[in-house]
Length: 294
Length: 314
Image (cartoon, each protein chain N blue to C red):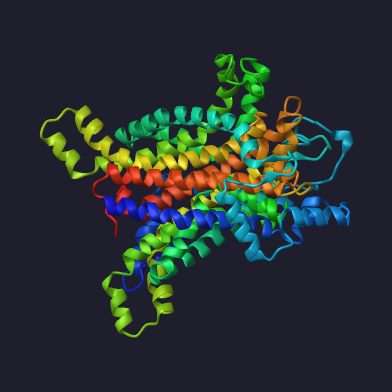
């Protein structure tokens, strides 16, 4: 993450800025809490097979609806499946979807934003397309796209990316429009740099900070939206565990077995919370205009 | 100024066109044969042929698009397959539910969110700021459908204060209507309050840092006048831009919450439509919402331009 921030200040200043930014990030309270939360959840997801010996879809009807206990820390569901295991494996699915959506939103958003800023002829067309996509409420757009592509993990990823790219593209375009007027871009042009080189080496790195902040928030939104889509039955299909579909399944017997839907919801909340805190920290440090701590 | 407004309105025209094309593509881009998908796997070849013909899928793509636009110009947004009803009338029947839900939640959101944000900014770096902002952060991090189910369990099942689900029309008994909507609206506004409070805080911090606020204080204006009038009015300009986003998230969130609370609104209709593969219905609803938000976003833009004389067209 910080590597990207480094890229935003090319030239001789880079090493010093890098340390200043890193130190400020490390000292930032929300960033610290967010980093710990996200790191813990990510580790839990990555090492899920080592944290639990159970199989997420193994059904033991004998043990159905067991409340949380030493044997089943989060209890069991109507099929006797271990909720702790399902939440851990659900974290893999939910966090992975969030990560891929965040990264692809960043890459595609950056590409569209820089292209729009650099080629003024393309700009109106690209931006009107982004406006059009932004006219649909994000979750409805994602719902429409997953409906068309079918309830699969990759359709959820595509749908959420389509929903979140426009805002990213706008953000990159806005800062790229400022950067391209700066003297060193003119200097690069005089030195014979090609359009592609100017876009990738000069404009993009300097427009990346606001995008990085945005992408962190998109990560959080994507986790929330994936859960909502899976809850509605158009996201990740069962029996694959995702936080959203565990809640959907647990909902029907929430009065008798509250634990089934409680823990995946906590997982969603904690990861969105952690990412939002990370985003807040990044914004405070990377956008000095709003930085009241400095 | 009038040139700026004219440009903005003109920009909305291509957006409307693109929104229509995007909605059109929703069916055409279905992987495989849309007619087979819509008719179902077990459908006879005749039934598939009939669907294909009825939806005009047997014509070339450009011709389909031309027909699509022709229908739109006549105010024809397609018909639902499962309801045997035009999308407009199906949506019209359910829109009051969704709109009352969204309106109620915005009504809760605006005062609470703005107040929380202003207080947090004014008492920045104190425990008040941390407390309010932690709550706001929770608001934007908690999945609405999950906290909604928990709230049903608590207020509906455990305390029995409120109905667990269902909708009561406004007439003849508005009190029952309010009772059926208060929990969904509250749950819908949690995210929005958090979002608005966070946005208001940044806007206020920026305004409070401006020279004119220092000047206002220096020339002896009361704190109320310096903060309430000078700073807040400037922050308000930024807050206005949030209205479009708030409406959009309210409509989006209603899709999920109508499902949780079994409210017969447009969101529930869309979800039912998707599960029943009623693509023309989904397409029509998305199109109508898309059009509505082009107009809403345009109005917010214009409002912003009117409120802030510094905005000029580049």
